[in-house]
Image (cartoon, rainbow, N blue to C red; front, side, top):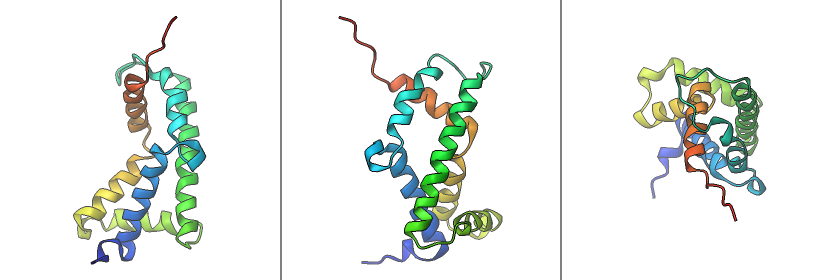
Length: 137
């Protein structure tokens, strides 16, 4: 079986992306963020991109940003990387984007998007629509 897709710096970025997105959907007991979204998405219910942003949104974003940072640190440690090595790899890949493969470019875009405030707000709005409705007895 050919594993070259996962080799080299581009492979590392692909693995980092997969690791991060597994963390986003995994439950807390598996080191994931699922409950963070479930517990906090109600603050975004009924809001749109055009609404004034609430201070709560930025507070939650900062918490989320820390979770993403911790997940990427965990990935780096699991890969045996130095503390700043993954960040440097992402920065280098962004500068060399034109020469990267489509898969690597997609990984870079996804890693950067994971820490984007506007995308975070959109994701939370989407989660608020998916959240189970309260049941009244």
